[in-house]
Image 1: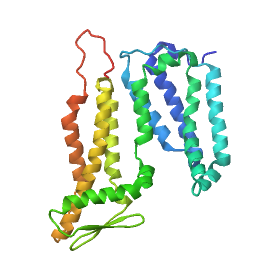
Image 2: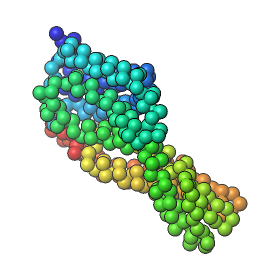
Image 3: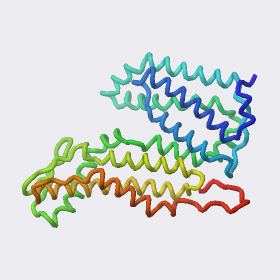
Image 4: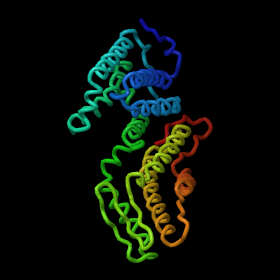
Length: 305
């Protein structure tokens, strides 16, 4: 017996968005009860997916209407979440402790935090998976990118032994024309940039992650607001270019700090002003390129690609 028969009187996009919202609520409850075995990233990705699906409306390619959510589907959904929650409460803390000293346990822990995405499959009919997945491919791709790349703090910590010499080398290249004798001294978890008057220690706090996250948040807001009119492939190019540009601006920031601390009595750290100017410039020069023209009067709206 259907328990959400009102769904038949709403648009297919609203039907999908409603079921995504149910999944976000369930994942949030699990995260609140057993945070050690869960991650906020799936919640963030599905919340972003909810916004994009809600914004797409009835644009082409259109979604097929979904059947009302049955009692059996909701029971299976809740049951799967209860099983995952029980496993998290039983093994989550032990697995988190083991992950600190074992790569295998760490991999299992990461996988277990993504399993929470599986129960949503119970809310959608398997026989209509193709008619759901194909029209929603841009939204699903955007949510997957958000899941994998937003606030990559663990990735930065993992690659820091390789990334820090690259930052130090680029910064040293920028400052050498102004200061001769600048050289690098690598350490275990940092790189020492030796200058004529003052030295600079580059540790993980110099990675530029905060500026990168600021760009990701701004980009997500623009996508959510303008989703129907955004060219999807171009937005992917802008996202990749923007992440790279923010990392380059971080190198420029470090160079300015190093130069001013060695050549003047007062150190200048442009930090947020430089990042904000970079974001504004990126938005100014790419917004029109990434945004599709609005459809003419009487033309059927299409989801920009």
